[in-house]
Image (cartoon, rainbow, N blue to C red; front, side):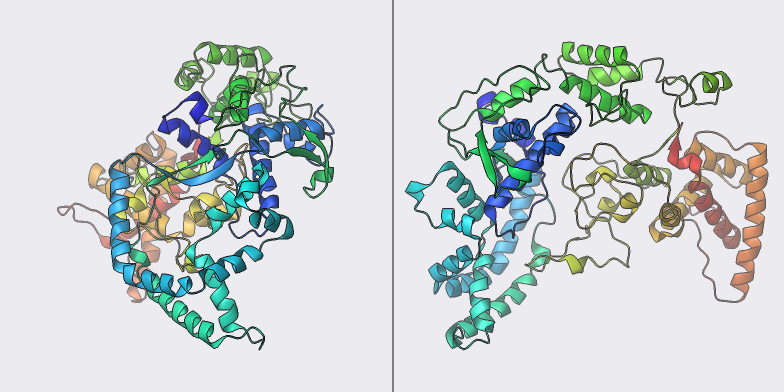
Length: 591
């Protein structure tokens, strides 16, 4: 698609990587099934994200609510029949890529002797090892794998592309391990057993250099390709969605429940032209859904509820729009403005509805108890990333650096990331060595499906398992326990306490006002100050009694200026007060 629509544009190439976000299983032994799973994920994602349709319901049977048949589903899926992910497209050389190359070169230099010895051992039986590796795949996969290249069909080409992508030098070691560790006399081979023992020893030596590898990012782009051919594998309706039960063959077609348009597919020598045809229709002003679905998602982000509350279901089972005229207006203007996202945001943010106060109004409650028409601004809890970033910002610890590779803040001590190590012994979570990276915005925290970052996970971060329609907002004991018991958050509270004392000085009333200004954007009222002072006095007494026993370590504020003299016990009580106030609803909700 990028070649036919935007040739030579790296940004457009990267954009196709959106379709490469499917949950992958590199060890799958059924490559035909894997192809079906990938195209299914892509189809379902396009349906939810772009068209606001629950297309996945029609994969196994005709949709029970909308006029989408199985044939319609697989006709749409056939637009993606020829796509395949690639992860090795060289990226333009910027500072990040240059740093990656330099670090990778260090690893290669340090390990070249070990890797050369491994290769020398594998080369003694390379063909046998590769044949053994290929034979581990299931029957329908092997039919393509062992077919001569000149006889490959489009389907065979996809299977062999996938095989090449998931086959590494380490994959060939399975042959040596199987024969070297076999207890069956028929398969025992002393020579190979000795070679496997040496390979295993070299693998352990190689893992010692893992820390020398680049910690994040790469020098390549992940994208979707069509493997440089015009033909595409056939697509079928599958009985009950089972890829082993093909029925009638189908061709690319838009869902007739949405449009009467027919795709204008123009194959090229290097592309089937299918994705281009689909992309043009999706972004066409005549498509009734794309613009409406997008502006509705933006509206939902700002107000907590979309104009259509079911943001990924504009079908019969979804909710009707509360204000269809508004939805039509925003969608039409969005297209008229050249699909400018900035203009859309400006339109909403400058509107009177966004500028409404969130104070309770009895007249509004009587007229619209659920506030569907937004006469008052709805109170909303901060999203997971906003909770963490707000705590960091309040503590004065948020790193403002923009861009760059993902980061890995430290995990709680009770989480053992080495349990999720890959075959090379690399842990699933490599804590960033630069302390500044630990306090980057949550946007930059690496998202691993098998190991979500705990603080974000507690506050309903988006599930990385599939296209996430809308953030859930739950209230659970774990959230309160996370905020209250996390050593990391308590450390941020100590930093916030230090910031407050530095900025407000010695007067405790001024400190309370400064704390409220930082966290809530207002001063504490008289009743609140009375409660806070009472808490301070009580907590000071508790801490003094514990200190007197010699069994309590005082937690004083972090980052205090050298010229500030404070009573450490009173300061420790203030840290606890800061921690409590930062745990309040007013801090993690926006009004």
